[in-house]
View 1 (cartoon, each protein chain N blue to C red):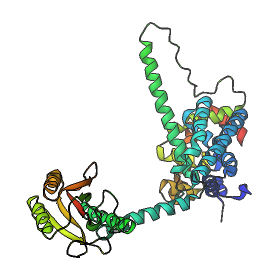
View 2: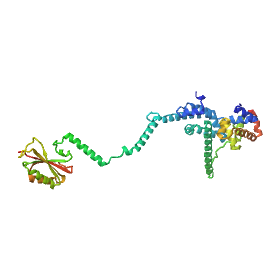
View 3: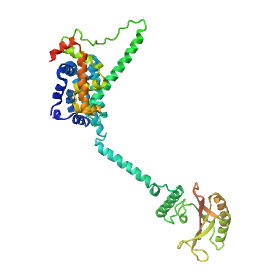
View 4: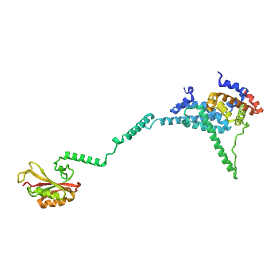
Length: 224
Length: 198
């Protein structure tokens, strides 16, 4: 099989002069060739470094791993979008508030105890109400509960006896020590006035500010 | 090591950050690109400008080389586009010069090289070659392309056929007709000078 050159020689025949002129006629100046070569190689060096740097991430990790991480992140986002309804649905605000409130109340109950007696808290109400301590100047008589229940009812609240052994007795030998009334906070002062009139209050201890809607009034009776 | 590799292998090496093979690419293609540019512009200065532009932008242009075609045909396309762009810009610049000429300014027209051999050319062979080059514009585009691909870009017949999308026999016949046409265009006087090549 003939080479291109042999075929060309056969085909062009006597026109080898023209072919030679075409092939070698326009010779570039050697100094231009050398100068351009130098510039070209410098450009090639710079371009290759740029390409190499581009193939590496700024963390020095191969681009492959960066792409892998990006693909993983994308897959995670897709998964989250698909499962949004089942585990990413926002909990209603009210439920959160109640949950937090109950949780906090439970913690206080453990820390303080239901009968901690700490000023400002109502142990029997899970420490969720402001508390007022009042000491009566009179003795506990059988009529007292009825009077206190009536005062509480007038104020829109309720009254209940708190039993505790070993803290003194009354005339009939019972163990009643104190009574707690739960009344709305905005009528507290009126209730305290009514209690003072009915049973006489020697001492009142209450928080400077009332933060709960209802307040628990602990009334202790003088055992003497 | 690099000299045994194909153009495409050298380009792939460069794209992966190893520029060592680009010197081989330059050695293989510098003359070809220059000859192609010169054949179209017929000015050594213009051919140098275009060749410089092509090689200095070559590395960054490699992003468009997808490896589907041979590098030789790709760079032929790049060089052709560069020459066309150069010609277009020069034409625009000359038209602006012509506009300026309508004023009273002392305009000096841009010197354009004559097709005929100049007195500075001392070598008869070079004179004849320039004369042959000047006749290329008279060829039909199909024949001229075959001449460029064969004698300037040094592609094989098969590569030319692939590049132009024609049969191998078509390439041969076009080349034959192109050479014959050039021969008829060259004057008897110049053929006397051509005898120096034989």
